[in-house]
Length: 487
Image (cartoon, rainbow, N blue to C red; front, side, top):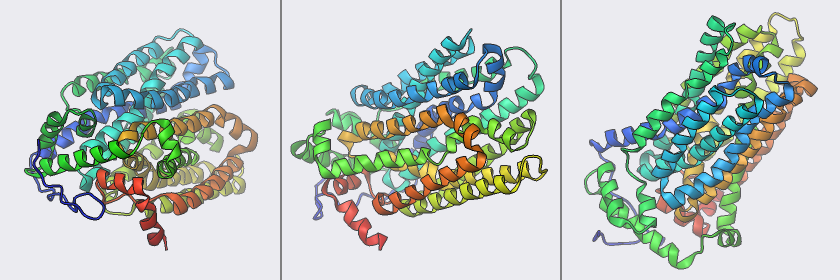
Protein backbone atom coordinates (compact mmCIF):
# COMPACT_ATOMS: atom_id res chain seq x y z
CA UNK A 1 0.00 0.00 0.00
CA UNK A 2 0.90 3.65 0.10
CA UNK A 3 4.09 4.72 1.79
CA UNK A 4 2.92 8.29 2.29
CA UNK A 5 4.22 9.78 5.52
CA UNK A 6 1.34 10.76 7.79
CA UNK A 7 2.89 14.05 8.77
CA UNK A 8 0.21 15.63 10.85
CA UNK A 9 -0.99 18.95 12.01
CA UNK A 10 -2.31 19.35 15.54
CA UNK A 11 -5.56 17.89 14.26
CA UNK A 12 -3.94 14.63 13.19
CA UNK A 13 -4.57 15.02 9.46
CA UNK A 14 -2.20 16.11 6.73
CA UNK A 15 -2.24 19.86 6.29
CA UNK A 16 -2.79 19.73 2.50
CA UNK A 17 -3.16 17.38 -0.45
CA UNK A 18 -1.27 17.85 -3.74
CA UNK A 19 -3.03 20.47 -5.89
CA UNK A 20 -5.86 19.55 -8.25
CA UNK A 21 -4.12 20.12 -11.60
CA UNK A 22 -5.85 19.77 -15.01
CA UNK A 23 -5.84 16.38 -16.69
CA UNK A 24 -7.89 13.63 -18.37
CA UNK A 25 -9.22 12.47 -15.00
CA UNK A 26 -11.68 15.40 -15.11
CA UNK A 27 -13.44 13.92 -18.14
CA UNK A 28 -13.65 10.57 -16.40
CA UNK A 29 -15.10 12.22 -13.28
CA UNK A 30 -17.60 14.08 -15.44
CA UNK A 31 -18.72 10.90 -17.19
CA UNK A 32 -19.19 9.01 -13.92
CA UNK A 33 -21.20 11.94 -12.51
CA UNK A 34 -23.36 12.10 -15.65
CA UNK A 35 -24.24 8.42 -15.42
CA UNK A 36 -24.96 8.47 -11.68
CA UNK A 37 -27.14 11.57 -11.94
CA UNK A 38 -29.58 9.73 -14.16
CA UNK A 39 -30.85 8.69 -10.73
CA UNK A 40 -31.57 12.38 -10.09
CA UNK A 41 -33.21 12.69 -13.50
CA UNK A 42 -35.59 9.85 -12.64
CA UNK A 43 -36.18 11.41 -9.22
CA UNK A 44 -37.18 14.69 -10.86
CA UNK A 45 -39.36 13.21 -13.59
CA UNK A 46 -41.27 10.78 -11.38
CA UNK A 47 -42.04 13.41 -8.74
CA UNK A 48 -43.24 15.98 -11.30
CA UNK A 49 -44.96 14.10 -14.12
CA UNK A 50 -48.24 13.92 -12.14
CA UNK A 51 -48.41 17.72 -12.34
CA UNK A 52 -49.93 17.34 -15.82
CA UNK A 53 -50.91 13.67 -15.85
CA UNK A 54 -53.09 13.75 -12.73
CA UNK A 55 -56.09 15.51 -14.28
CA UNK A 56 -56.71 13.03 -17.16
CA UNK A 57 -55.72 10.11 -14.88
CA UNK A 58 -58.33 11.18 -12.34
CA UNK A 59 -61.04 11.11 -14.98
CA UNK A 60 -60.13 7.64 -16.26
CA UNK A 61 -59.51 6.04 -12.84
CA UNK A 62 -62.43 7.89 -11.14
CA UNK A 63 -60.24 9.59 -8.53
CA UNK A 64 -61.59 12.18 -6.09
CA UNK A 65 -59.63 14.86 -4.21
CA UNK A 66 -58.57 12.43 -1.49
CA UNK A 67 -57.52 9.59 -3.81
CA UNK A 68 -55.60 12.10 -5.93
CA UNK A 69 -53.66 12.97 -2.80
CA UNK A 70 -53.09 9.27 -2.08
CA UNK A 71 -51.72 8.64 -5.59
CA UNK A 72 -49.39 11.63 -5.23
CA UNK A 73 -48.27 10.94 -1.67
CA UNK A 74 -47.88 7.14 -2.05
CA UNK A 75 -44.63 7.79 -3.91
CA UNK A 76 -43.53 10.21 -1.21
CA UNK A 77 -44.22 7.97 1.78
CA UNK A 78 -42.48 5.08 0.01
CA UNK A 79 -39.57 7.43 -0.75
CA UNK A 80 -39.12 7.92 3.01
CA UNK A 81 -38.76 4.15 3.42
CA UNK A 82 -36.48 4.04 0.38
CA UNK A 83 -34.22 6.70 1.86
CA UNK A 84 -33.55 4.62 4.98
CA UNK A 85 -33.31 1.23 3.25
CA UNK A 86 -31.23 2.69 0.42
CA UNK A 87 -28.67 4.02 2.88
CA UNK A 88 -28.41 0.70 4.70
CA UNK A 89 -28.22 -1.19 1.40
CA UNK A 90 -25.45 1.05 0.09
CA UNK A 91 -23.46 0.43 3.28
CA UNK A 92 -23.79 -3.32 2.86
CA UNK A 93 -23.61 -3.73 -0.94
CA UNK A 94 -21.75 -0.61 -1.99
CA UNK A 95 -22.98 2.62 -3.58
CA UNK A 96 -22.68 1.30 -7.15
CA UNK A 97 -24.64 -1.93 -6.69
CA UNK A 98 -27.32 -0.09 -4.70
CA UNK A 99 -27.86 2.31 -7.62
CA UNK A 100 -28.08 -0.66 -10.01
CA UNK A 101 -30.91 -2.12 -7.91
CA UNK A 102 -32.65 1.26 -7.77
CA UNK A 103 -32.56 1.54 -11.58
CA UNK A 104 -34.40 -1.80 -11.76
CA UNK A 105 -37.06 -0.50 -9.35
CA UNK A 106 -37.49 2.62 -11.50
CA UNK A 107 -38.06 0.40 -14.55
CA UNK A 108 -40.53 -1.98 -12.87
CA UNK A 109 -42.43 0.77 -11.04
CA UNK A 110 -42.75 2.79 -14.24
CA UNK A 111 -44.26 -0.12 -16.14
CA UNK A 112 -46.73 -0.89 -13.33
CA UNK A 113 -47.96 2.72 -13.42
CA UNK A 114 -48.24 2.81 -17.21
CA UNK A 115 -50.42 -0.31 -17.31
CA UNK A 116 -52.34 0.30 -14.05
CA UNK A 117 -56.03 -0.58 -14.59
CA UNK A 118 -57.27 1.01 -11.38
CA UNK A 119 -56.46 3.11 -8.32
CA UNK A 120 -55.01 0.23 -6.27
CA UNK A 121 -52.48 -0.89 -8.89
CA UNK A 122 -51.52 2.74 -9.53
CA UNK A 123 -50.72 3.23 -5.84
CA UNK A 124 -48.61 0.03 -5.87
CA UNK A 125 -46.66 1.27 -8.91
CA UNK A 126 -46.16 4.69 -7.37
CA UNK A 127 -44.93 3.05 -4.13
CA UNK A 128 -42.34 1.02 -6.08
CA UNK A 129 -41.19 4.22 -7.77
CA UNK A 130 -41.09 5.87 -4.35
CA UNK A 131 -38.69 3.27 -3.01
CA UNK A 132 -36.42 3.98 -5.99
CA UNK A 133 -36.73 7.76 -5.68
CA UNK A 134 -35.98 7.72 -1.94
CA UNK A 135 -33.04 5.39 -2.36
CA UNK A 136 -31.62 7.49 -5.19
CA UNK A 137 -32.02 10.70 -3.17
CA UNK A 138 -29.82 9.15 -0.47
CA UNK A 139 -27.27 7.09 -2.39
CA UNK A 140 -26.50 9.21 -5.47
CA UNK A 141 -25.40 12.39 -3.62
CA UNK A 142 -23.24 10.32 -1.24
CA UNK A 143 -21.68 8.44 -4.17
CA UNK A 144 -20.83 11.70 -5.96
CA UNK A 145 -19.46 13.37 -2.81
CA UNK A 146 -17.25 10.36 -2.04
CA UNK A 147 -15.84 10.33 -5.57
CA UNK A 148 -15.21 14.07 -5.85
CA UNK A 149 -12.03 16.00 -4.90
CA UNK A 150 -12.94 18.39 -2.09
CA UNK A 151 -12.09 21.46 -4.24
CA UNK A 152 -14.95 20.69 -6.65
CA UNK A 153 -17.14 18.52 -4.41
CA UNK A 154 -19.99 21.02 -4.33
CA UNK A 155 -20.23 21.48 -8.09
CA UNK A 156 -19.85 17.74 -8.80
CA UNK A 157 -22.31 16.51 -6.16
CA UNK A 158 -24.63 19.40 -7.04
CA UNK A 159 -25.04 18.08 -10.57
CA UNK A 160 -27.60 15.68 -9.17
CA UNK A 161 -29.85 18.62 -8.27
CA UNK A 162 -29.36 20.06 -11.78
CA UNK A 163 -30.55 16.75 -13.22
CA UNK A 164 -33.56 16.78 -10.88
CA UNK A 165 -34.75 20.22 -11.98
CA UNK A 166 -33.92 19.48 -15.63
CA UNK A 167 -36.14 16.39 -15.44
CA UNK A 168 -38.87 18.42 -13.76
CA UNK A 169 -38.72 20.93 -16.60
CA UNK A 170 -38.79 18.08 -19.12
CA UNK A 171 -41.90 16.68 -17.41
CA UNK A 172 -43.62 20.08 -17.60
CA UNK A 173 -42.74 20.54 -21.28
CA UNK A 174 -43.71 16.98 -22.26
CA UNK A 175 -46.99 17.28 -20.38
CA UNK A 176 -47.74 20.65 -21.99
CA UNK A 177 -47.06 19.34 -25.51
CA UNK A 178 -48.90 16.05 -25.08
CA UNK A 179 -51.77 17.59 -23.11
CA UNK A 180 -52.41 20.38 -25.60
CA UNK A 181 -51.90 18.21 -28.71
CA UNK A 182 -53.51 14.89 -27.76
CA UNK A 183 -55.27 15.85 -24.55
CA UNK A 184 -58.58 14.31 -25.66
CA UNK A 185 -57.06 10.91 -26.46
CA UNK A 186 -58.10 8.34 -23.82
CA UNK A 187 -55.21 7.16 -21.67
CA UNK A 188 -52.84 9.89 -22.84
CA UNK A 189 -51.51 10.17 -19.26
CA UNK A 190 -50.02 6.69 -19.69
CA UNK A 191 -47.76 8.06 -22.43
CA UNK A 192 -46.61 10.83 -20.07
CA UNK A 193 -45.69 8.24 -17.43
CA UNK A 194 -43.96 5.87 -19.87
CA UNK A 195 -41.13 8.28 -20.71
CA UNK A 196 -39.23 7.45 -17.50
CA UNK A 197 -38.52 3.88 -18.64
CA UNK A 198 -35.85 5.25 -21.03
CA UNK A 199 -33.53 6.90 -18.45
CA UNK A 200 -34.10 3.95 -16.08
CA UNK A 201 -32.60 1.65 -18.71
CA UNK A 202 -29.74 4.09 -19.37
CA UNK A 203 -28.95 4.29 -15.63
CA UNK A 204 -28.72 0.50 -15.31
CA UNK A 205 -26.44 0.10 -18.34
CA UNK A 206 -24.25 3.05 -17.34
CA UNK A 207 -23.75 1.94 -13.73
CA UNK A 208 -22.34 -1.37 -14.97
CA UNK A 209 -19.32 0.59 -16.25
CA UNK A 210 -18.49 2.99 -13.40
CA UNK A 211 -16.28 2.39 -10.31
CA UNK A 212 -17.30 1.89 -6.71
CA UNK A 213 -16.84 4.67 -4.14
CA UNK A 214 -13.20 4.60 -2.95
CA UNK A 215 -14.22 5.61 0.58
CA UNK A 216 -16.67 2.70 0.82
CA UNK A 217 -13.92 0.38 -0.43
CA UNK A 218 -11.54 1.61 2.29
CA UNK A 219 -14.24 1.09 4.93
CA UNK A 220 -14.55 -2.52 3.74
CA UNK A 221 -10.77 -3.07 3.80
CA UNK A 222 -10.41 -3.16 0.00
CA UNK A 223 -7.54 -0.67 -0.09
CA UNK A 224 -5.94 -1.71 -3.39
CA UNK A 225 -9.25 -1.32 -5.25
CA UNK A 226 -9.80 2.08 -3.63
CA UNK A 227 -6.35 3.26 -4.70
CA UNK A 228 -6.97 2.06 -8.26
CA UNK A 229 -10.23 4.04 -8.42
CA UNK A 230 -8.61 7.21 -7.12
CA UNK A 231 -5.67 6.86 -9.53
CA UNK A 232 -8.17 6.96 -12.40
CA UNK A 233 -10.06 9.95 -10.97
CA UNK A 234 -7.24 12.15 -9.66
CA UNK A 235 -4.12 13.86 -11.07
CA UNK A 236 -0.77 12.07 -10.77
CA UNK A 237 0.48 11.82 -7.18
CA UNK A 238 -2.82 12.90 -5.63
CA UNK A 239 -4.40 9.45 -5.25
CA UNK A 240 -1.68 8.07 -2.97
CA UNK A 241 -1.88 11.05 -0.62
CA UNK A 242 -5.67 11.00 -0.53
CA UNK A 243 -5.93 7.27 0.13
CA UNK A 244 -3.44 7.63 2.98
CA UNK A 245 -5.58 10.33 4.55
CA UNK A 246 -8.75 8.22 4.22
CA UNK A 247 -7.03 5.16 5.72
CA UNK A 248 -5.51 7.17 8.57
CA UNK A 249 -8.81 8.62 9.71
CA UNK A 250 -10.74 5.37 9.19
CA UNK A 251 -8.26 3.51 11.42
CA UNK A 252 -8.28 6.25 14.04
CA UNK A 253 -12.07 6.34 14.26
CA UNK A 254 -12.50 2.56 14.30
CA UNK A 255 -10.37 2.54 17.46
CA UNK A 256 -12.19 5.39 19.20
CA UNK A 257 -15.87 5.44 18.20
CA UNK A 258 -18.88 3.13 17.85
CA UNK A 259 -20.99 4.07 14.85
CA UNK A 260 -24.08 2.01 15.60
CA UNK A 261 -27.24 3.96 16.40
CA UNK A 262 -26.61 3.78 20.16
CA UNK A 263 -23.10 5.13 19.73
CA UNK A 264 -24.35 7.95 17.52
CA UNK A 265 -27.14 9.00 19.88
CA UNK A 266 -24.84 8.91 22.91
CA UNK A 267 -22.14 11.11 21.32
CA UNK A 268 -23.10 14.78 21.58
CA UNK A 269 -21.27 15.80 18.42
CA UNK A 270 -22.67 12.98 16.27
CA UNK A 271 -26.17 13.57 17.62
CA UNK A 272 -25.87 17.29 16.91
CA UNK A 273 -24.79 16.80 13.30
CA UNK A 274 -27.59 14.26 12.82
CA UNK A 275 -30.18 16.75 14.09
CA UNK A 276 -28.71 19.44 11.83
CA UNK A 277 -29.02 17.12 8.84
CA UNK A 278 -32.63 16.32 9.72
CA UNK A 279 -33.36 20.02 10.17
CA UNK A 280 -31.93 20.87 6.75
CA UNK A 281 -34.05 18.19 5.11
CA UNK A 282 -37.28 19.11 6.87
CA UNK A 283 -36.98 22.88 6.39
CA UNK A 284 -36.13 22.47 2.70
CA UNK A 285 -39.52 20.80 2.27
CA UNK A 286 -41.37 23.28 4.49
CA UNK A 287 -40.62 25.99 1.95
CA UNK A 288 -43.51 24.41 0.03
CA UNK A 289 -41.45 24.00 -3.12
CA UNK A 290 -42.71 20.52 -3.90
CA UNK A 291 -46.32 21.53 -3.35
CA UNK A 292 -45.80 23.90 -6.28
CA UNK A 293 -44.14 21.16 -8.34
CA UNK A 294 -46.85 18.56 -7.64
CA UNK A 295 -49.88 20.84 -7.72
CA UNK A 296 -48.62 23.70 -9.85
CA UNK A 297 -51.44 23.33 -12.36
CA UNK A 298 -54.00 23.41 -9.51
CA UNK A 299 -52.43 26.55 -8.01
CA UNK A 300 -52.29 28.32 -11.38
CA UNK A 301 -55.91 27.42 -12.16
CA UNK A 302 -56.84 28.89 -8.78
CA UNK A 303 -54.79 31.96 -9.74
CA UNK A 304 -56.98 32.46 -12.81
CA UNK A 305 -55.48 30.45 -15.70
CA UNK A 306 -57.50 27.96 -17.74
CA UNK A 307 -56.50 24.28 -17.44
CA UNK A 308 -54.56 24.24 -20.74
CA UNK A 309 -52.98 27.66 -20.09
CA UNK A 310 -51.89 26.45 -16.65
CA UNK A 311 -50.12 23.48 -18.28
CA UNK A 312 -48.14 25.90 -20.44
CA UNK A 313 -47.54 28.37 -17.59
CA UNK A 314 -46.12 25.49 -15.55
CA UNK A 315 -43.12 25.51 -17.86
CA UNK A 316 -41.96 28.93 -16.60
CA UNK A 317 -41.03 27.77 -13.05
CA UNK A 318 -39.29 24.77 -14.61
CA UNK A 319 -37.17 26.96 -16.88
CA UNK A 320 -36.10 29.28 -14.08
CA UNK A 321 -35.27 26.28 -11.88
CA UNK A 322 -32.84 24.91 -14.47
CA UNK A 323 -31.24 28.29 -15.22
CA UNK A 324 -30.70 29.10 -11.54
CA UNK A 325 -29.45 25.56 -10.80
CA UNK A 326 -26.70 26.06 -13.39
CA UNK A 327 -25.74 29.33 -11.70
CA UNK A 328 -25.86 27.63 -8.28
CA UNK A 329 -23.43 24.96 -9.46
CA UNK A 330 -20.97 27.62 -10.57
CA UNK A 331 -21.08 29.43 -7.23
CA UNK A 332 -21.41 26.51 -4.77
CA UNK A 333 -17.63 26.04 -4.38
CA UNK A 334 -16.92 29.77 -4.34
CA UNK A 335 -19.45 31.05 -1.82
CA UNK A 336 -20.11 30.23 1.84
CA UNK A 337 -22.69 27.47 2.31
CA UNK A 338 -23.99 29.18 5.47
CA UNK A 339 -24.51 32.52 3.75
CA UNK A 340 -26.21 30.72 0.85
CA UNK A 341 -28.73 29.16 3.24
CA UNK A 342 -29.35 32.42 5.08
CA UNK A 343 -29.94 34.38 1.88
CA UNK A 344 -32.09 31.61 0.43
CA UNK A 345 -34.50 31.35 3.36
CA UNK A 346 -34.78 35.13 3.60
CA UNK A 347 -35.72 35.38 -0.09
CA UNK A 348 -38.19 32.50 -0.06
CA UNK A 349 -39.93 33.94 3.01
CA UNK A 350 -40.21 37.29 1.20
CA UNK A 351 -41.63 35.59 -1.91
CA UNK A 352 -44.24 33.78 0.20
CA UNK A 353 -45.35 37.04 1.81
CA UNK A 354 -45.63 38.70 -1.62
CA UNK A 355 -47.62 35.80 -3.10
CA UNK A 356 -50.03 35.83 -0.16
CA UNK A 357 -50.44 39.62 -0.32
CA UNK A 358 -50.92 39.68 -4.12
CA UNK A 359 -53.62 37.03 -3.82
CA UNK A 360 -55.45 39.21 -1.29
CA UNK A 361 -55.09 42.48 -3.21
CA UNK A 362 -55.96 40.99 -6.61
CA UNK A 363 -59.29 39.16 -6.23
CA UNK A 364 -60.51 36.43 -8.58
CA UNK A 365 -61.51 37.92 -11.92
CA UNK A 366 -58.84 40.63 -11.92
CA UNK A 367 -57.02 40.20 -15.27
CA UNK A 368 -53.63 40.93 -13.69
CA UNK A 369 -54.02 38.28 -10.96
CA UNK A 370 -52.81 35.16 -12.83
CA UNK A 371 -49.76 36.87 -14.31
CA UNK A 372 -48.66 38.60 -11.09
CA UNK A 373 -48.97 35.34 -9.14
CA UNK A 374 -47.13 33.43 -11.86
CA UNK A 375 -44.28 35.97 -11.72
CA UNK A 376 -44.02 35.68 -7.94
CA UNK A 377 -44.16 31.86 -8.06
CA UNK A 378 -41.35 31.92 -10.62
CA UNK A 379 -39.36 34.23 -8.30
CA UNK A 380 -39.93 31.79 -5.41
CA UNK A 381 -38.82 28.77 -7.47
CA UNK A 382 -35.77 30.69 -8.68
CA UNK A 383 -34.77 31.61 -5.13
CA UNK A 384 -35.12 27.99 -4.03
CA UNK A 385 -33.10 26.64 -6.94
CA UNK A 386 -30.37 29.26 -6.70
CA UNK A 387 -29.77 29.26 -2.95
CA UNK A 388 -31.36 26.22 -1.25
CA UNK A 389 -31.78 23.13 -3.42
CA UNK A 390 -28.19 22.51 -4.48
CA UNK A 391 -26.80 23.69 -1.14
CA UNK A 392 -29.10 21.39 0.85
CA UNK A 393 -28.27 18.20 -1.06
CA UNK A 394 -24.55 18.96 -1.22
CA UNK A 395 -24.36 19.74 2.50
CA UNK A 396 -26.28 16.59 3.45
CA UNK A 397 -23.88 14.50 1.38
CA UNK A 398 -20.77 15.89 3.09
CA UNK A 399 -21.48 16.67 6.76
CA UNK A 400 -21.59 13.11 8.12
CA UNK A 401 -18.52 11.01 9.05
CA UNK A 402 -17.86 8.07 6.71
CA UNK A 403 -19.05 5.33 9.08
CA UNK A 404 -22.37 7.09 9.72
CA UNK A 405 -22.76 8.75 6.31
CA UNK A 406 -25.39 6.36 4.98
CA UNK A 407 -27.20 6.32 8.36
CA UNK A 408 -27.12 10.11 8.74
CA UNK A 409 -28.08 10.76 5.13
CA UNK A 410 -30.82 8.11 5.35
CA UNK A 411 -32.32 9.56 8.53
CA UNK A 412 -32.20 13.14 7.18
CA UNK A 413 -33.72 12.22 3.83
CA UNK A 414 -36.30 9.99 5.54
CA UNK A 415 -37.56 13.02 7.46
CA UNK A 416 -37.34 15.13 4.30
CA UNK A 417 -39.60 12.68 2.45
CA UNK A 418 -42.02 12.27 5.36
CA UNK A 419 -42.46 16.05 5.45
CA UNK A 420 -42.81 16.10 1.67
CA UNK A 421 -45.37 13.28 1.81
CA UNK A 422 -47.65 14.95 4.35
CA UNK A 423 -47.54 18.20 2.37
CA UNK A 424 -48.29 16.28 -0.81
CA UNK A 425 -51.22 14.52 0.85
CA UNK A 426 -52.79 17.55 2.51
CA UNK A 427 -51.81 20.50 0.30
CA UNK A 428 -55.02 20.32 -1.80
CA UNK A 429 -57.01 20.35 1.45
CA UNK A 430 -54.96 23.23 2.88
CA UNK A 431 -55.27 25.43 -0.18
CA UNK A 432 -58.98 24.58 -0.40
CA UNK A 433 -59.52 25.59 3.22
CA UNK A 434 -57.42 28.76 3.56
CA UNK A 435 -56.72 29.69 -0.06
CA UNK A 436 -53.51 30.85 -1.72
CA UNK A 437 -52.98 33.73 0.71
CA UNK A 438 -53.30 31.71 3.89
CA UNK A 439 -51.18 28.86 2.52
CA UNK A 440 -48.27 31.09 1.55
CA UNK A 441 -48.38 33.16 4.74
CA UNK A 442 -48.10 29.83 6.58
CA UNK A 443 -45.04 28.88 4.50
CA UNK A 444 -43.53 32.33 5.15
CA UNK A 445 -43.72 31.77 8.92
CA UNK A 446 -42.03 28.37 8.57
CA UNK A 447 -39.25 29.92 6.47
CA UNK A 448 -38.61 32.50 9.17
CA UNK A 449 -38.06 29.65 11.66
CA UNK A 450 -35.73 27.96 9.16
CA UNK A 451 -33.72 31.17 8.85
CA UNK A 452 -33.09 31.22 12.59
CA UNK A 453 -32.15 27.54 12.55
CA UNK A 454 -29.50 27.82 9.83
CA UNK A 455 -28.02 30.98 11.36
CA UNK A 456 -27.63 29.40 14.78
CA UNK A 457 -26.84 25.76 13.97
CA UNK A 458 -25.61 24.98 10.46
CA UNK A 459 -21.78 24.85 10.17
CA UNK A 460 -19.66 25.89 7.19
CA UNK A 461 -18.48 22.96 5.04
CA UNK A 462 -16.98 24.61 1.96
CA UNK A 463 -13.23 24.21 1.37
CA UNK A 464 -12.66 21.16 3.60
CA UNK A 465 -11.94 17.60 2.50
CA UNK A 466 -14.42 14.98 3.69
CA UNK A 467 -11.76 13.70 6.06
CA UNK A 468 -11.13 17.16 7.54
CA UNK A 469 -14.87 17.73 7.88
CA UNK A 470 -15.16 14.35 9.56
CA UNK A 471 -12.53 15.12 12.16
CA UNK A 472 -13.96 18.56 12.87
CA UNK A 473 -17.44 17.09 13.36
CA UNK A 474 -16.12 14.35 15.66
CA UNK A 475 -14.28 16.83 17.90
CA UNK A 476 -16.86 19.65 17.74
CA UNK A 477 -14.26 21.98 16.20
CA UNK A 478 -16.56 22.74 13.27
CA UNK A 479 -19.00 24.55 15.56
CA UNK A 480 -16.34 26.56 17.36
CA UNK A 481 -14.99 27.90 14.08
CA UNK A 482 -18.43 28.82 12.84
CA UNK A 483 -19.40 30.48 16.11
CA UNK A 484 -16.54 32.91 15.50
CA UNK A 485 -17.50 33.37 11.85
CA UNK A 486 -21.13 34.04 12.79
CA UNK A 487 -20.03 37.04 14.79
